Image (tube, rainbow, N blue to C red):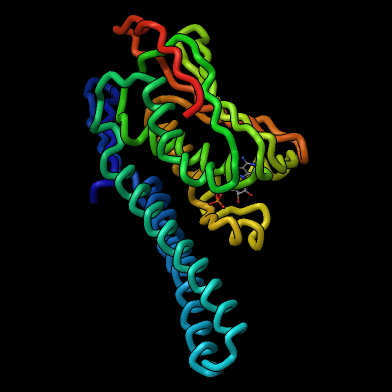
Length: 269
Ligand code: ADP
């Protein structure tokens, strides 16, 4: 069992030393429970859109001459399908994360991560006329997996766009702080109450299921960000208030062996 841990202790007993071998099943049980919960949640989350698609197709088949109903139901099928696609992609991201956590350990340019993540969100941002503005400045070198870090920042930007009104701005900025760098994403969106910010990093947690569903949300995005942050020795924070926008910040340890790269004055993407 790869999750079983064996503790070895040497303890004095009179004039002898005894070797104590202790098998730790507590951690194994905890990991097994998390895995079981995850599979149950994933099954539920996959069944919901599949069930909806099936019902909607039946509805269309039942009233093929009602052009208005056919248009409405087809639109909903397209919406549920894109949710399904997003969910499958995030499950793939999560499993990739679990397989490769700690495997990639290369120097990564934090500004490059931010620009690439923004480029991958541009289509969604353009669709809402949300401007992605990258604040120019120094870059910082971190260590880990470039792809996973891009996935994490992309999830933050995707959310910033999804939970913002049209024609707003999302600011992407970076600050060095001692031996860490902070990659922040600030939106002018709906914001979050304190009790919500405590739970949003849990898998499948969504503040408002109906609203999140209409944005194509899966409830997995932020738990992926948290996993990526933790597997890179960092953390993720949020500062937000209802109606006043949010700032999500990924804090990562700097690569101790690297010096900052020259200034790259990139702006909007
Ligand atoms: P989802 O796929 O539903 O967006 P996430 O794990 O990415 O799932 O986020 C969990 C919940 O946190 C979302 O359903 C949403 O309610 C809230 N949330 C995330 N980012 C933001 C944001 N920038 N502004 C407001 N609410 C947010």
